[in-house]
Image 1 (cartoon, rainbow, N blue to C red):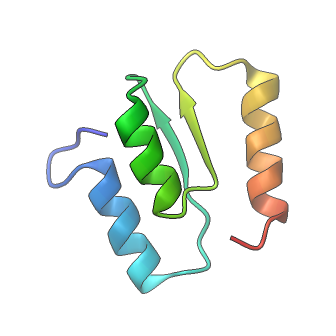
Image 2: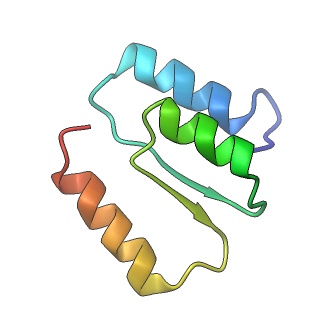
Length: 69
């Protein structure tokens, strides 16, 4: 979520503005329930914390690819 120019939630917001059909999957090192809620409310297809099992992550990617979000 922490990056040099803006945080991940700001990137997500800008991306939704310029490309509403682009699906966003958040992968972060910090499991913060408020950040998770904000990301999902802003349209993220999935939210994962680093260390997530590969099968769970792949299922999230497949769901995002097949969803209309």
